[in-house]
Length: 283
Image 1 (tube, rainbow, N blue to C red):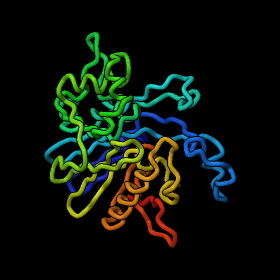
Image 2 (cartoon, helix red, strand yellow; image 1 turned 180 degrees about the vertical axis):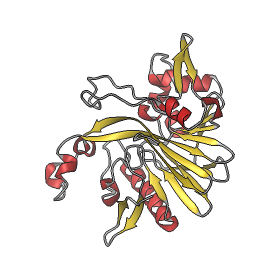
Image 3 (cartoon, rainbow, N blue to C red; image 1 turned 120 degrees about the horizontal axis):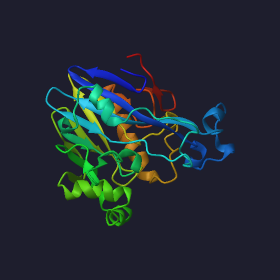
């Protein structure tokens, strides 16, 4: 295990967080939060861009391998998300190989939502074109994201990210747009959690009395858990609050472990007098 990966176990199921690279995000701009609205003691969070990871999650049960999101660090130096002088770690396929997992051993790829940093590594360029990275896997995306105007427009442009990722998966019969919840195995369930995008979804893993949730972008920073009304301006506020509340209710009842794409540590929710906070347990 390196500084870029972390593995926990739920019984005989292994869950590995894989950081494919760090970016910077200005939370105040993302939330469109005025300085006067920032609570005391939060200046370190909002005064400057924060360094956050882009994480994919590998779930290995005795029967199957599932990947939650498949990303590649692909930011030009002039991108507002790029950190000056930053060198990303080895990519997702290298990290999977370190876990002894070959690309064709991935049976399921769950794409939490159709923001490029969550699906950019479902294909790779080789033999003069783009080919699926995980040729044996079913790839699941929320139907509402698949049917969006931006997605459908992008699919018509083979030079676009959507065109050379989702378009290729669709052509190869590997893509399955879904609605609602879906059981992939007895341990793994896809759960609808709209808000960040209309088709945003999360994954629940439950085995031997223990539960883990891979949250995608349901939260971007622990401060959003304490202040559930704070969220990026592009999210649907009502849908996002509802999805967050469902997660809070379930995670507290199950004492579940949680991981989100852009939060570097694994956490649990801890009740407080005014709500809940993100707690980082010793694992």
